[in-house]
Image 1: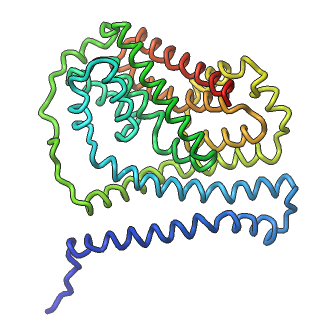
Image 2: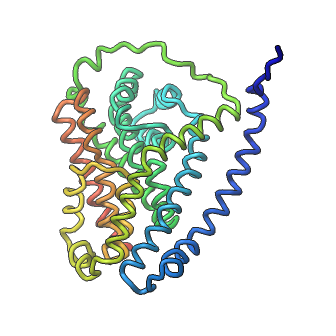
Length: 349
């Protein structure tokens, strides 16, 4: 009896570059047709007037949802390829032996391209400490990694353009570096839970794992499925709220509350953002709509940084390894730095 053999994995892997090229072509075509398609559906197919509130909200929603999801998929894929060159073990090895200052800068830069989520905060923290990395350098990494994540940068670029995205990256790096230096200078090692210092480092994973380009492409595709699969609902809900603000919230109301003239708006936005639990996918579309209605850039970015950078779940998880005094300093230093950044943006922009 003759059986049909399945295609060999090697042959399938050789086709990956072709599929990547095809996906890039389809992505470019889709990205360039969403604006006219959203307008056609809203104003021609459904017949809403261009100056109607619901028509504007619907066009905003139909354009931003596919645009953000396309940007997210494409950039996550590219960034995930880069991330295959950085394992947590390799990151610890690169940061080991770096003195304060230089180490803080290096840690913040590595935080941008290293996989990180709230659930990994504790094992990463323990791994860094047991590797002999200074406490302040460790915090620079832990602040930068969730704050300047690919979702935030991609969505800011898609909604505001490269200048705002670049400002966000630079300010996030500055906050991570400054906060890490301050925490390091305060010598707060005594406020780390005692058991952390007693953990002995294991052998860890090999630093020299060999990956082919096909391996990297497959891992990047898995990252796209995982990340987009987790955040797509936040994108839709966030853009739906933003679309409602875009079409229905009076401009004068937001200018009075979140405009440059309201001196108290930046600290109020940070205090409001700290306890909220959201991610970049949910909060950035709302930030975009607030800005369109007259809210100042510094105020809304300060709000977003507080929500994303001072994640309540991450803070609760870190309580397992940090004493309340260090948690309070951690939150306070970052909050002050974010408030300063918000005022600075409002002054210069």
